[in-house]
Amino acid sequence: QVQLVESGGGLVQAGGSLRLSCAASGRTFSSYVMGWFRQAPGKEREFVAAMTWSGGVTYYAESVKGRFAMSRDNAKNTVYLQMKSMKPEDTAVYYCNARPVVGGLSGPEYWGQGTQVTVSS
Image (cartoon, rainbow, N blue to C red):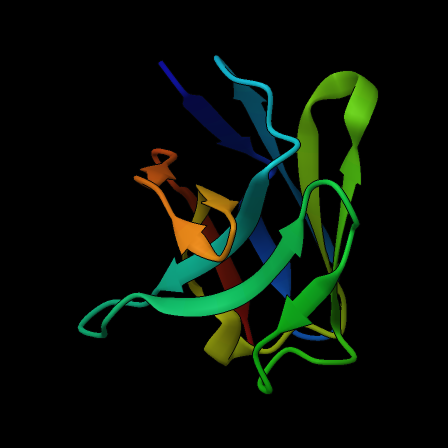
């Protein structure tokens, strides 16, 4: 059973920084794509960033490019989302996502419980 546990959310002023963590367990994640999504009040969940666990290739939404950086710690089975130069529009619940991708085919995806990030102006 895959478990994803996010932490690190909180309240930050505009221009500030936060680092989110997602501790993953229950699988070997070498074939997984790990992602971060967010959902603001009244809006649909949207993609923020993703990383291939094996190769460390990263992808970012245009809205966060240059401000957010995703990384991983293989020894801790943990992925991170470093957020800098934060804006009030970054306020949302942030969710960690894990999805196996083998031979170009995606398997079932898993979600964490979410962590609230609030950016004050």
